[in-house]
Image (cartoon, rainbow, N blue to C red; front, side):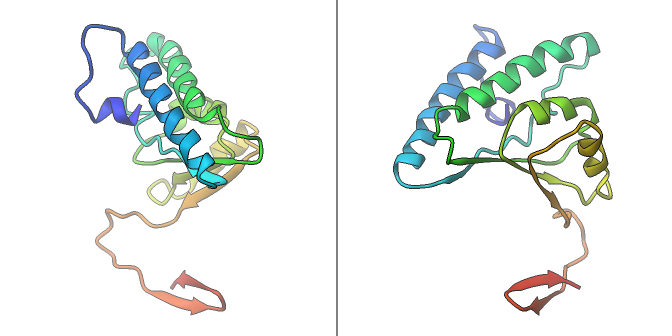
Length: 156
C-alpha cells in the first residue's frame, strides 16, 4: 500500500489489481533476499491506514485486498525466515484487525505519539506475535540523550 500511496499508479485498472502486481514484484525481491542468506526480512507498510477509503462501508473490501497483497509479497519464504513489518504515522484503531491479519512475525509500530495506546489495542484483540513499539517520535523537537548501559544504549 505504501508503494501505491506514494507513487503514480495506473488509472486503467482497479487499485487492488495494481497492488497484487506490486506484491508479486516484492515477492521476487523477498525471495532473492532469502536466497542470499537473510533470515529476517522487513517489509514496511506505513501507509496501510493512509489509503483507507473515506466511506466506512468500503473499509472491509480495501483491507481484504491490502492484507492479501502484503501476504502475497511475504508468503514465499521458508518457515524459518522471519517476516517483520513496520507501521507508523497513523491512528491504528480502524485497521487493528488488519495489522493482526498481516501475519508478520514481528511488527514494529510507532507508539510514542499515542503514548503506547496501540499496545492496549493489540492486547485487546489477542495479538500474539512479536511487537516492537517505537518510543521516540522523529518529529519531536526534543533531541534524545542516550547513556551506555552494558551492551546497549538507552534514552535518559
